[in-house]
Amino acid sequence: MSAVHNKARTSSNPERAHTGTPIHEKVLKTLAELGVRSVGDIQQLFYELSQTLNDETNSLVIKGAQSEAERERMCKTFRNRWLGRKSGLIAQADENWLKAAGTDWRRDVGRFFNDLRALVEGKIAALPTEIRLHVGVGSAFADTSSPDLTLPGFRRTLGSVHPVTQVMREIEDIFLGLGFAIESGPEIESVYYNFDALNIPESHPARDDWDTIYVNPETLLRTHTSPVQIRAMEKHGAPLYIICPGKAYRHDNPDSTHATMFHQVEGLAVDTDITFADLKGTLDYFARKFFGDKIKTNFSPSFFPFTEPSGELAISCVFCGGKGCRVCKESGWVEVMGCGMVHPEVLRHGGIDPERYSGWAFGLGVERFAMMKYDINDIQLFQQSDIRFLEQF
Ligand code: DAH
Image (cartoon, rainbow, N blue to C red; front, top):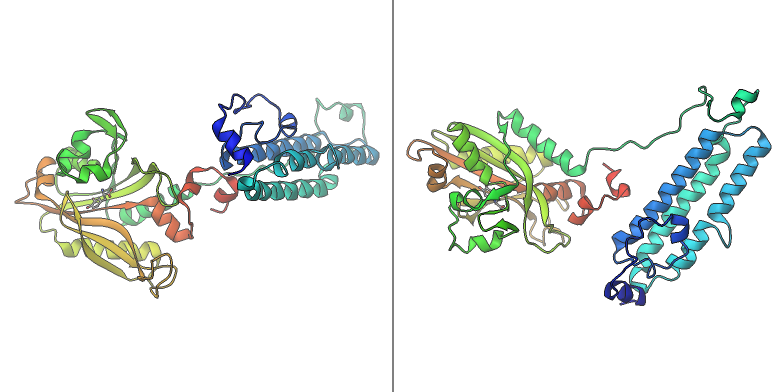
């Protein structure tokens, strides 16, 4: 582990936040001095620099120049400030952040650094055409408090809908088209709805798989969207066709496929004469609508306390077309959701007579669907707010 890394981790980091420090002072300090602890902290620093870059170019563009000579001066000053050989912000970031970074972080810092430098160079190249000359300058134009309204505006980057939300909406659309309604339930849920009503008694080992963050002994952050099944049955009775998109929480350690907070879509159909054929037909239709007609689906037996029989739906691997690759672990298939026929106990807990009604249900992970659809290899990317990632959607 590098010196920077060690120091940052073991020191109590009194300076860690450095929130009030302006960025031109931050570039004079090394990452260790700034109390940087993670790649996210480094990314934040570079983000601040790029924000400063944007703010400064924007204000020059708004200001405009009175003459060609003034415009040249403005561009030169700006260039020196950013690309000056010794005291330019980029040179300082190079000296204090990149060169002083330990081996653990050099690659990440280098990546952010190169991106930023490219951004700076782009801005500098564009600046002479973006700073407009005030033609026919009179005293009114010289006064920046009365701006020239004929000047073109500057472009602001537009945000976009988060990929997880996009995928969630796409899933919703497919089920809305099939006549399902959208339900929601609380994220802070009772032990009863999260476990007991779903046929997971206190002694059941399945509770361990799902155990999570408790608010108090009776209340927790829901570990799945399944409790909404019970709430919806209680509220609407049968027949019932619903999906529930929403957040779920687990005590999983974060890695490339696990996050403590993630999104699920739950589905539930309850009616007279519902059979496993309804489940298969609907989920097969859904999977093809979402992943495309070329995929094949495969149902295999599984276990969930709230369904009997339980199954898992796999689709032929979208990356290799079913031939076998690293993503599908050479099997040609990727499991995408759990499903099954609603356990009679669960119907009873929802106030529905299992002698008269039957049902099927499923639960899927939205991030996983998004990762497969867009070939994303790390679930953490969804929560890092990195604009370079998000702007691709
Ligand atoms: N709740 C399960 C989980 O979080 C997913 C699930 C499986 C939901 C089967 C269902 C189902 O409704 O029938 O892993």
